[in-house]
Length: 249
Length: 319
Image (cartoon, rainbow over the protein chains, first blue to last red):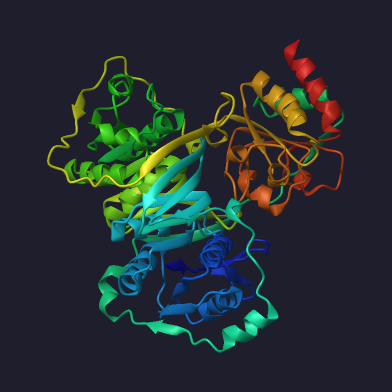
């Protein structure tokens, strides 16, 4: 079976974020990583391939040249192939899904595993947009995935508990962090990855579908520090919460 | 502007967060706009009857909607949005909406803003606020294509007021719709207890690595939460060692919450955790380590051991 894993790059959120005076992100000195949720999706795909002793894991990214770094990491972890749909224009969740749909139509995977969200903007649309565009069944927020004959059983982490559903394939499964712990790229893996070419995907016939659906007008830093009032006892804490903050009755 | 609120329910009534979404829709609709509620499920007359006290209800009742599989729901939501002249489809943030309504957004052309914390109307255009980069940045965004889909954080808006007289309930005509029935539902391993969901609770009592066992967490954090009528929450550090269930994990990789009061008990305050709660209105922290980063994010701090402080809090509150 062929498994497609979309790869996105995100800002490592452990870094200090700066906003320029014009309200845009100042990312001159910031480091981008593979989206941690996508790394889990890739690890899951590699484990499925290993458990069946056959199959192909294909990674795909949509965006600028810089994504080659993340795709190289994916290859070093063990992906068989990497595709890059290269564009310099701003890519949002919708345009990512539209381009991925085109890739799916030529690659014909049996399963798409994608990170359930992107860490930097807490958005979980790409997987469900792609499932909607393809008209494939979907299972979101997976914390357990079992591939059976032409079916996939998924434990979903929902607000009310773990829900189990079974879908026919092909289907889209979005992956949560509880699925696994992604492996590190070994030195051997990194050497091997160097010899695999990154395949280019043309975006020529897609221009009109890629117009932005949502525009970000500006960014503002939230209050990061509060002045903590230290109290001496449980009784005093309750008093402050009742009469100073007025959040308890 | 016409808004359609896709309301989540438990078969009995609409959940609180969806009623907050109705309140947002009323504020956004303006003078001539229409707010409607869309209910989906099987045998949901009782829910529809109650929901009709908040807005006119479109009711999609079908056997296949008894199983929560996103593709069936999404097709109907997209159909209802198109046929009702909806500008914005609204739902409360959460795993249900982001599965089902998110897919509907894909069918409607891909305009979606998730986890909205507030809105403003500027020169007749509606702008939304949402949090980025682990809650450290607020982005203001605008929709560039319609219809759009927006999910609201339940705590961002109050619950809509109830109309004494019910609005009409209209059945959504599903007869000519092609809905493919794929996949099957095996069931839900339900979250224990009946505490509020942290995502829309007014007060959250949250515990961290300081709790040595799941029993201690339940007795102390759970006990205090129950006295306050609050939700219980936990840090990833505690969830990872099995000290608390994963559905109540607060943080970048769990739930992002903004209650009126967040009590952080025995939580050190990693960036991962702060991302999930830093925008709470009031934050109070109890920790033995005076240098714990949680105190930099807190309004009130008490240096102490949760095993001693929580029983004292419980005792004062119960007397």
